[in-house]
Amino acid sequence: MSKSRNFSKYIAYAFLIIVCLIWAVPILFGITTSFRSQAEVVSSGFRLLPVNWIVDNYVTILENTSTAPILRWLMNSIFIATTHTLLVIVVISITGYGYSRLKFKGRDALFFTLLGISFFPAVVNLITSYKIIDALGWVNTAWAMVIPGLAGMGNIFLVRQFMKGIPTELDESARVDGASDFRIFISIILPLIKPVLIVCGLFSFTGSWNDFLWPVIVYTDVDKMPVTAGLLLLQDIYGNYRMIGQLMGSAILAIIPTLLLFLFAQKYFVQSINLNSGIKG
Image (cartoon, rainbow, N blue to C red; front, side, top):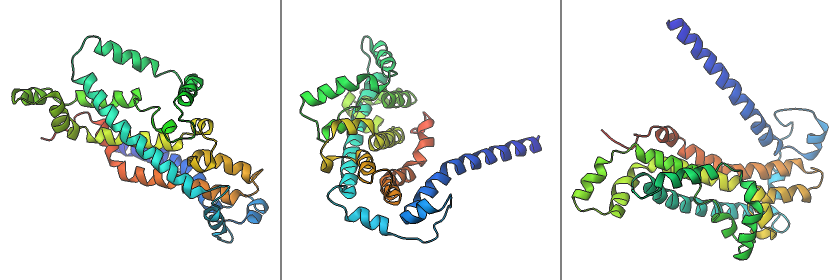
């Protein structure tokens, strides 16, 4: 029996190593390519490490503050993604509390109706969403990226399910002591759902940061673009991929914030899976 378990464990490890290599090799190749000269990129075949390591690509990227201001794009993305994430946490925590703790007529029917509607791809509402943003005067502003998607039903579903794992006896005890729903939410529920809020915040941050199609539509001002729209502009500026090293360098700079955020928040993933993880003892 133990040999069978060990064999299964080795198979699982081998599979995970293969998946890791499939993911890691292209990333590593992209990082090393950002340190190659254009002559080396076009002259040599696949080589994981450069023959000559250079930093000229990064110097050129950082010095370009007119046609391709990568640092400004990064700051725009940080502001947009951070603001969006903070507002998402506020909205989904309050909404999840309402759907899991408050009792009102049609609560579950409304929730599952909205959940079903959310299964439609976002591209279906693309034209309508743009018309709304244009009517509000939010084209070429951060609000066009911050406000849409605040009440994502996927995040609300996770928060609602997590809250259902918290005993209702805590609410009833607090009400006996005279606590209001707002006080129960702030003092009891909110501290217990911190793991799932962090995970939803991570999803929201990476989703906002990596959003590509929507910012390309709502932004035309180069200085106000987030980094994803800026990377598309870089391809046109460097035409026909004549500066592959600089493109790779820009892409590597763009993934650093989300990578750091994931390393910080990864421990909360396991906690969020356990619906009772917020309950101690």
